[in-house]
Length: 287
Image: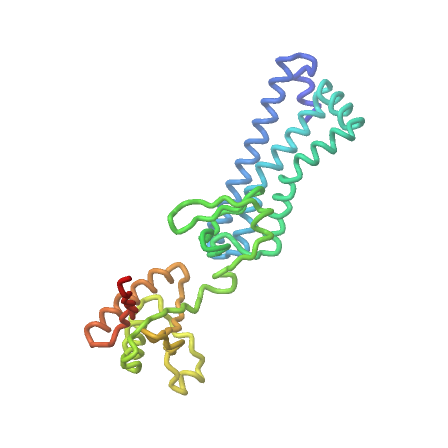
């Protein structure tokens, strides 16, 4: 390829050098677009395969970077003017190389961390992860530099790969999408616990995302699908908790809200004693 270009372009002519750079840049752009389009077709075909999709999407993000880097190196070493200066810089600039390496340390750490995330898969594109109370959502993309998380407000969290790879992550969907949801309820001290339990179980079974996670042995032994336990008894209420299996983690919050509302309405309708705050009144004598 270089021999053909040398016949058309003179490396000592400014216009020829500019045309040469534009030509190589165009070729690199076309190759990048073609490869990214092919990878996009593979991504669509493997939409449900989170393991493969994450690796392919990371590769797609890497294509533009590496092809651009190869094109830049090819341009530098194909033009004598640039090649001589590049050789001079790289042959006797150990200090400069050290400075550049130090400056690029953060970029390299993000690149390596991104590769480790793709290889070891602590999370994948499409996973529901939680770093803390404020950073949670769906992994939307893993680039060379950062991970993009779409939170439930449709806002994007941009977290450097070097940061997220060292944080402790709660992954709700790393194995499967089934989660055990804790649903807490409070009833009064004089409440009929059996009636409250019955109401909670009946209403929980009506929720569409609720699933039956019992083993065949547990079904034969008539173990209830929804377990409701008394967690604690306080001075003004009884704390009850329903253990509800949900087949879609993204619907857990909505399901918990709907269940609390409908259970409260049933409690009021059927006369279940509700907690009443106990207020201590202190009467002070006039001084």
